[in-house]
Image 1 (cartoon, helix red, strand yellow):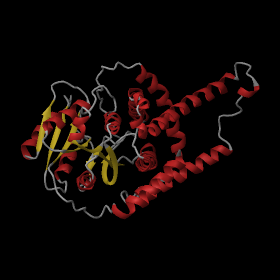
Image 2 (cartoon, one colour):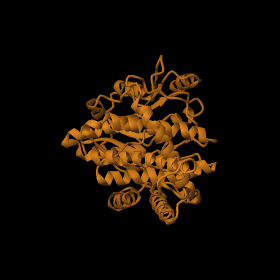
Image 3 (cartoon, one colour):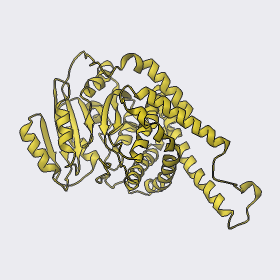
Length: 397
């Protein structure tokens, strides 16, 4: 899969990105329709002033900002009201009851008259030209339903944070480029994505039961033949967990949301017109099989110390040998190519290449464990239960 992603991302880079996406230039549009910048908030008192202030400096002539306070338990609501008094472009929606990010996004989408809705998280800092880059896709093709941006990490003060810098390039950025080349995306990045409102209305907006609104809406749009694109020049600077507890909680939620989507959209195999989603489905199933195969491998290794096993089931060591060298070479090649591509948007990216050495060990194990826990959680989760959010770990700085 790594080599498949490498080939796909390189094709994407030379076909689209290298020639057209120069982040130092501001794209000229054929028209400048009114857009809404939507910020769903829950307990964002520490970050919301920076986020809203940054959005007010967006280099776009016609926009407003809609902040949705989803019954925060801190001062988020009061801060937003104070900002709205100072800035007429800002509108604030207050939910009387916490209902989750999907409901918050849907509230804003229904209440705005804008056809184009750019959604970011309450702790994110959006590049000032992001809206221009994203809109080019919508104006050039009426079938584009969503354009996902390029999230970049601000939290780089710890080893855990610096490892994730490599991950966001080699995994998130590279895979989106490759999947876009091959036809369909598994998910947009919910922290930075623009939608066409008519496309959202066509699929019934966001689903209230899902834990990951971005995965679910991506599948709903693409099953209805709306196109999703990736715009790497639309950068968005975000905070990520830098503690193991925070990282575990985040990745478990992501994994559970992915499993929810796979279980929810099993029906795509009954419809030939959904065939372009089949490879994405298979890719997830392979990762699921890999996780459970690794669990079985570990259990067999431990069992031989307590039971007499047939010779074909005896595992001499858990440490990789020649295959481990091949995996390490592949992983570091993937990260190096991804960083080379993304360095034009993040000039300090190469400083974190050394820390990415630990990615295959630390994050593959984390991915395996979260998948093992997440799939049963998704399988037995109440379908009518709201996908509410908790205050996440925002990193050490």
